[in-house]
Length: 253
Length: 274
Image (cartoon, rainbow over all chains, first blue to last red; front, side):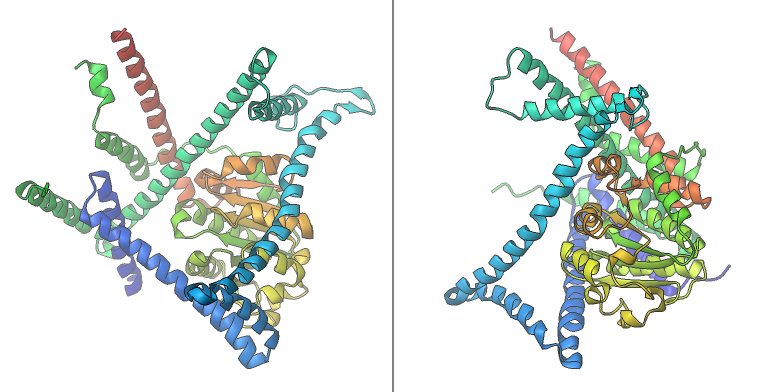
């Protein structure tokens, strides 16, 4: 058996330790969990700052200007620098130009594309399957519920879209037929929330499976069994903290 | 206090322990429950299968370590498939916090498959701007990524021969854990520059992406760890996702049982109180 590289072993110990510290919250909120939580936030922010500085400032701004003489890059740099004027109260108004540029460009890029992709395309997809019922060889209708492209499913989708839209139409009182349609809309919404919740449970369980898989892997002797030793250490620390908490009741003043 | 009342006020730590055991035991003693392949996962697989050798496959690793358990196995399975098909694999990320992880992932799978950097694959790294990067790549890939992750000029990479923009990409898959992700690649990429797009996402995001799948806006979708397990089965190389499926089924069963029991106790208590 080949020995693992030293950095892999260190990585395994750090990952195991932090996982167990985070899991300790399941027992109750405690300083070990807080330590891991703060470490996570600090390391994440530090990593993003360093990566952004290296990629943006060094590779996309400084190097092209200094090495390739791409002077045009000074224009976006100047617009970006205007953002920093917010820290100088007298010059803060200048930052509005930068914000105006970002908001204007963002809206200009996003609005037409979003309308095309999420409204027009989806409306088209809701109606198109119904139009396909009337083909060259007369009217056809497929009843297969398991086939997403069947005509029956197309009608269910049309019913769902119409009734949910009606439910959110508040200018008319939901009574009589309107009440039935709105109730149908609620039914579709409930099914949608249920599906969403089911997928969320699946996702959260996947995260737990991921961490436990790593903990099982790191209980191997080749890593020095960090799972075993650090589990004992975490349980011991929680026990000591709980005892100290009992001996020193919290100051209520 | 009645039995129902006591059960409804049960210490939540007992439930955590139960879920923990339901996850841990199947991981330690796997049963190997069958995994059915869904049409949405097959969509991605079939498209990669249909690509001729040396086609350009662009994989955007749009997640960070927080979503690693779900999306990492998807990325590994996709890369193994693409390398096995001898495609030219170009990888990148729109998430700055996922840069190091993405580099490690691509390097690890490429090494395992005996692929050479620059000729068979490349990792372009991260470029700021999210949706603007996609638009920029649609116009000129080299302007969005003048250099790769290691600082080499992208114009000198043989893997990018004949590729000027997104229009020259044979197939593109975004593995997204949020924004920017699959939706942005469709809205600002495929819809404008007309290339074939597939998606992979976390379980939480999957219901929101199904409308794009049904309308053909994306040709396939790998959803969560389950999707990864299906893909691993399709390529015949079982990994961490397949190993986790027994645990996933066990926890789902436990949660269904808890929901039913909780409802039964609730209604029984309501009946007792009249």
